Image (cartoon, rainbow, N blue to C red; front, top):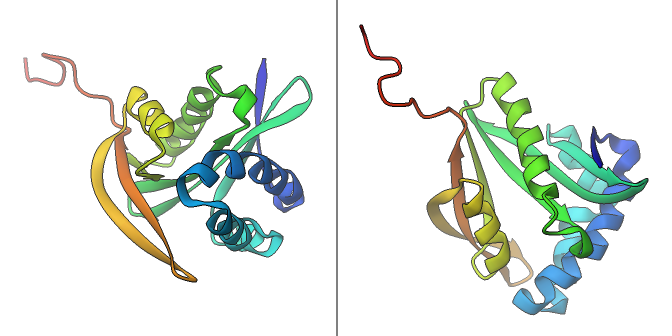
Length: 175
């Protein structure tokens, strides 16, 4: 059984610790060790995480049997649209429905706020993540290359998912 809780600034060491375990395994084969080290410092230093929280990023942490196993973060980026900034699960915990549970939690939070779409960026070469997101209903929206400094780029697909349930045939039609 997993539990999901909202994270606070006091949880920054937990989030950072999880990122330090997940990122090297996930991204070193894609972008190399130097870029991973640079991006971890850029996005996961205590100061960077605190700034993200202060800017409105909502973080959650997932636990199983008393251990922290995953985290996610999102924020509203434009009226009615939110962006999933992070969703990371320890490699040994992947494939157990944790990502789906976290997305369900986030989706319910967003729907309660009137958000109608969720977008995310995923590295174009992170094939397992792309397959997961497509399996849970995300579709390709666009591609973008983001200059993150120091000569590094994030080469991403932007995926999107509507949070408005599709009307079933005949539903909503005038009688």
